[in-house]
Amino acid sequence: MAFLELQGIAKRFPGTLAVDNVDLEVNQGDFIVLLGPSGCGKTTTLRMIAGLEVQTEGKILLDGQDISDTPAERRDMAMVFQNLALYPHMTVYENIAFYLRNKRVPKDEIDKRLRQVADQVQIGELLDRRPDQLSGGQRQRVALARAMIRSPKVFLLDEPLASLDAKLRSSMRSEFKLLHKRLVNEGGGLGTFIFVTHDQVEALTLGTRIVVMNKGKIVQIATPKELYSHPNHIFVATFVGSPEMNIFSGMLRRKSSSQSVFEFAGISVPTGERGLKVLGSAREEILPVSLGIRPESIRLGAVGRPDSFDVRVVSIEPLGQSNLVVLEINGLLFTCLVDPTMRLEDDILMGATFENELIFFFDPQAGVNLLN
Image 1 (cartoon, rainbow, N blue to C red):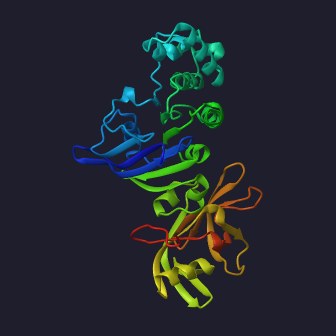
Image 2 (cartoon, one colour):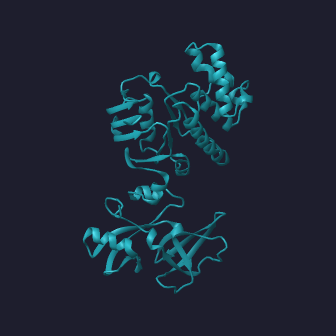
Image 3 (cartoon, rainbow, N blue to C red):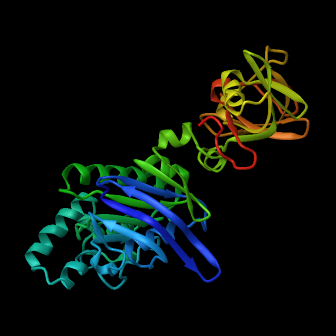
């Protein structure tokens, strides 16, 4: 039995179905990331888990108990909001101790637990300061400590890094990962995280499993590696990965028992065994498809190489460890990643090839991965 389970959860607002029949199982110690664009229902789902929103349909079970109608304060969960919601007139110590003081926990126990938690998130020297005397990262740690001191069964985090600058976000991602690992190993049952974000880098970095949502529905649940390598839908394929996957509309055609090609933009490119597999599954000789390929799976070289097609270099964008090259063929633009040492110039012709084993095929209407 799952530690936390959502069974057919739905949430309707007037004129809007925000969350549509969501089923999710969370194991104890998981770091689950709800990932999706703005308005996809991920925050509403988190708030229903917390008890801050009441589901229109479905049930929520925690540790085998139905908590669907249990008030938020009795669900044994701690939530960290995007705006952190620290009390500005209180010191860091008072902010962290607030919950336990309201529960009339003895002062000595509060002090012991508070200093232990403060050391875990490395704010032991900040306890006498007020929030306006702290940096963004320090305030983030205070909010985490305030949640941790409750020893909740589940931590709920609603885009907690959204307001931080890029460097600090990167640092805090590492701290979240280490904190989760420490709580799982040493926390005596703590360490179940549900984290909401629209940032796929955060999701891929932090999640043990990622729940991709779109238009109120779960599109795919997978590990970060599975999500990147085996997207089950064109939405997942284009949403996860930076730069995003190139998508081409065209026709997949069998040329022989051992060869297939993809025809688009007035050219045809070989598709290897993956194309033959799709045609075999569909029992067709020709099939309309959407071909997906990530920028790092496109190779550039001299014009006239075997199986290459001519493309024009439109622009070159240095990214440091690689260059993002925008290419054009018969009016169609797409991107590839190349080594920064490759000598390229705008408007020159190059030969491009696709790595056959890294091609994806999607149904042009339903969007599903035809190789699954």
